[in-house]
Image (cartoon, rainbow, N blue to C red; front, side, top):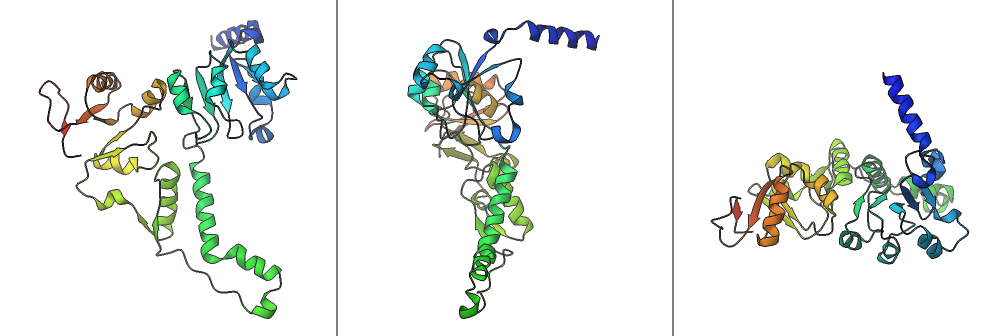
Length: 292
């Protein structure tokens, strides 16, 4: 039975002509291309349009495929701007292979109902390893002393000054997100005292951020202590919000008509709703916080 289903799937794939497949735009070769090769871009489920391989100027190339391109796979070297999206009215998804999204016009994507997804925490371990490695290098002066010796400066200037140990250092991390948390774990193993403002406020029950991102908040510690987090999700598409908010506690600042509609939708995703208002609304069943 499984063999028959697999054969049917293969037959179905073979029956699809390239022009019938969903089209994904690549503006420039992704950096990972030199590592993984072309194989991932030979998919039978998508047709990858490589703009750099076309003899046409970019705008002319995009205009020719304007109605068929449904997704964009981008990197920092190929920004997704408002002007670009204006040329591609059928785009519904932007995917970046990086953790950051500063090369994507999130507001423009939001206005057009375009979902945006990134690499999440895929690079968190690697980023944390690199950060701690560089920190040790600076404190122990490893590369600096190596240059000192290679240049022969020790002959006239004597021994290179000693470095400092990492153990016992008080470390503050700005932006305790995925990478920050992994850095904190590694530094704690070195015996460092990692500064975390959340742990210094035992009565904290609600955190409000004006950012559309949450990577500056220790969400793991917040969940452990039952601390609610309210943030400006206006730059996120509906799909991104669904992923980010499912099962979370959500605070709404100003529970007006829009806020109430948002609360109803969030309840469908199993969210625990609370709101901030000077006075508690008798018709609203959610917990009210007036002193935020």
